[in-house]
Picture 1: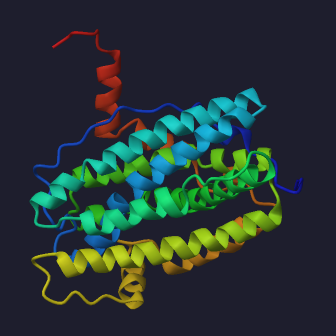
Picture 2: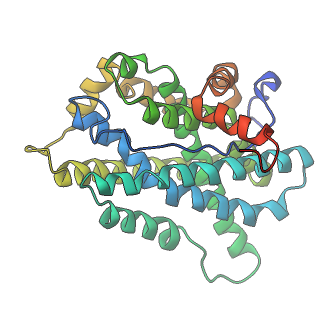
Picture 3: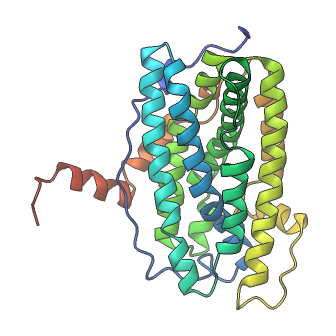
Length: 304
């Protein structure tokens, strides 16, 4: 057990709740970043990865819950599970819209489902050390992935260049609502990993696995979208395209992403020292989808 992590910043912790949001996609164009299929589809990969990935998060955490001996952490994990289940559903609901636009994601999502359900799914292992080892490996993988989901969430909250270029407001609200909740619960996965294990070697090893898997799946997703987009005549894409869009502010900056690596691998790392809960909460207080969900929750049952 490692005891060298930095102390959490208590003011960054908030009670987590799932917001029952919904989005209407009928007015969202295929290239919701106008004139920029590459940026559109680079971000669209989220809709392919997240439904299966976040269902997997929930599945693993339900297995880990009986091992949680801290009541406060248990409350956080339950809040995390509720939020991730809603994220999975909301991104899943974009897929029929993509099909209507001539982009059937099924061939790619089938690969993603295999990755999470088979490669990272439950294994027939004897009770005891082997079964616990596989659970802890997956808990650690989730902690590494959540470092990047929080990074992306914080980025999209401040990505004003997307607004300036006329990006679809409904898609931006989905991304920013999700991103804000990722920032809200950014410490939960790491706290659970620390509570159950916290070993530095496992943290470093699973970070490398998570980073490689995300990079591999993401580039395949972008290529899949561009090759199957009926309006794209030249589907070629490169790391330079990603780098250039990052410099323009419509995708995350390559340098910022790379600088986040040593922070996660630092022995004094704790997610509460990254990003701002206040900014996330401020967006959630203004998000059209989150406001609609809150109003619906407050309305009397059966009201029109």
